[in-house]
Image 1: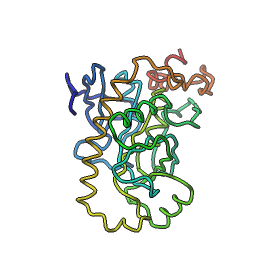
Image 2: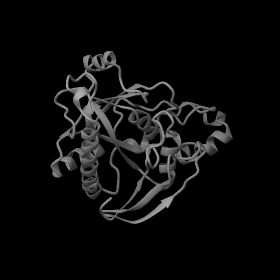
Image 3: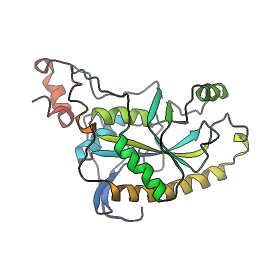
Image 4: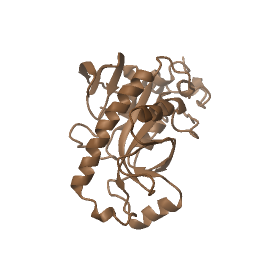
Length: 271
């Protein structure tokens, strides 16, 4: 990525296993950043196979406090065209085979998730798109399906009838875990194609999709550089205290092994 310097690779072990890939850290616009390829280098990990808990936990261990998700999606509305970006502010979860919480094993927590993304971080991302002349939609609902198969035509029509905007396979699981880890989370949904409902969907070629993907990637890098430049060091949102009123279990009853495993997340609440 242009402008990224002082890079190094970090491999982190977590209580939940290994992350998808080594994490690349570096300096961008004078600020320390970390990049993790959720599907691994070469895109070899299915959405269902991603170790979401290890990925988010590893970023937490590194000292990350904000996560920007960049991912490809398919449009459910005519006005959301390929090549455009959507900064999602809502998610619908249709996944089936994933663990989307750090809790259990003697410790119960229920985080607030009515607003699943960080409004402040999302606003910076949307403003950065405008600054970089990338057409952006400032809000919208991302429905997260299990995959790896794409939607049936009946599913696509159902999703459109329900008013959803884009569909993808990764973000909602990350967002849930990021909230539990008290990390800000925001999403740049890069529209690569219309979902199968669109009458011209079948005429789109693989080459066209790859061209759009490459253009989206170039635009995403420009947007990310601008967003990092504009972000303040200190957070003023509530993401960093998401667990303040979420831990339900009597601290005296939480197993020591669970406290130890989740110390980077709950340590300030459970001494």
